[in-house]
Image (cartoon, rainbow, N blue to C red; front, side):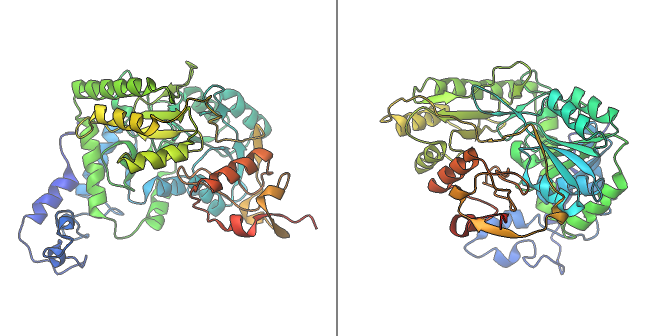
Length: 479
């Protein structure tokens, strides 16, 4: 049994920082000394722990010491065959996981509301994505994930699909048990990979928290430790959960895709995040869950708000996500803006709702003050019927997209208002959450146009650029 109270990377970095050594190696801030007397001296304490692969500090790409021990402790906590520390976010884990197993023209069944990195990986691998539309909750408009029926339809049409890529839970914290999905995929000889970016805390085992897809037997699972655990931004885990996975190929791609000079503060934060969740007392978790549950109930008493909850017992919601839909003239994006003016920053806003990501603590969060801020923002708003909250205008049960590398032919640019019925040749991705609204090979619908026009009007951000607003969207030429 490994000692989960140890933090090998963090402990070694602290010891090294206090050793009084002269450092004639990179990085150039020299344990922060170069900036110690500057106006950014607050940064000094972090830089003390920022080292490189000197003696005793191990090497992420050939770990034999503290990094190997930290990864082993993490694998032991999550009960996996292998766990790799990621310093490039879940994105790099998704890229490595897919590139290690998908070749030219391999068919992959993909949940349509996947993160853009899944599609980037398939583009690099020259795979053929078949996009499966998630079920949408009728009352809330939230994505419920891929049903067994939809997955079965996908395999009926593509029985030789090489892999299935699911997102569980969603950005909004909605998920489902994947045991039967895994069983079906394995029956067809297919891998089942899961983007569990928002689920690094699911292994805790509390009755209010659903089980991780690792427990369902998914082959490989990526988690963004920085989303729900106290890790630094970009710090993530890639878990290898079955012997079916080509571990050596995954490691090879991680060496190719990750920096050869990884950030030690990021690595230490992964070490600390595992330590935190592995040693969090049950009574503390109970207190935190109860606190945020009560905050949600108080917010639900504000008549200008709806707290969105999925009714079906087949799905679960993360108690650390609160989805709030305005019942007033404000859109979700506008409500986010008003809250920011009052000192409250939210995780995400769509046209129909905002998402709050609650921390695994109550320290520093005054519940009464938070609720009062919402009341203050909404006090002059008239109550109106809640508009549609769905952000998923998916027209078909499944859509086969052409291999990215073979997307050739004449194109033209047309105003989005004139694009209904046209075949897309570019990706349009609002961010957050980084889920493409339109993909190459999909036909533009009136719902797409309406949603894009509203997002543009309300100042939403697009990681794929905004040239489509000025020059039009790229579509197949009808000339």
